[in-house]
Length: 128
Image (cartoon, rainbow, N blue to C red; front, side, top):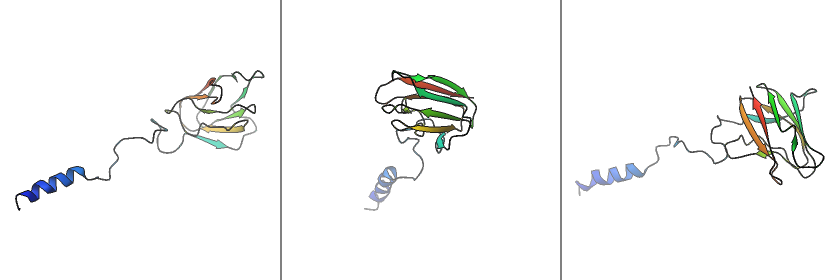
């Protein structure tokens, strides 16, 4: 029996949780640092860019903008359009609800791709 004790101990130790980070992600943000890099803020008097949906409802206008870190982009959307991350590598804060009028502030440099969930058209914000 005493000879089995070390074997049992090793078996349980191999199955235990060491409490450390396994490097996995939550499925929403694959490359983001802790916390969102995009947050909803009160719209400034002069946002760095304004993105709306065109009158035909088939695209964002403009569909690309370049801003500096810390600046905000205003989204002014038609009633059947939204903003959502274009894929699961984008920041989960990159969201404006259907028909929304909101400003998003970007706190880290990078390329942020977004889409209209109901219609699939896309846009890009480059933060320098």
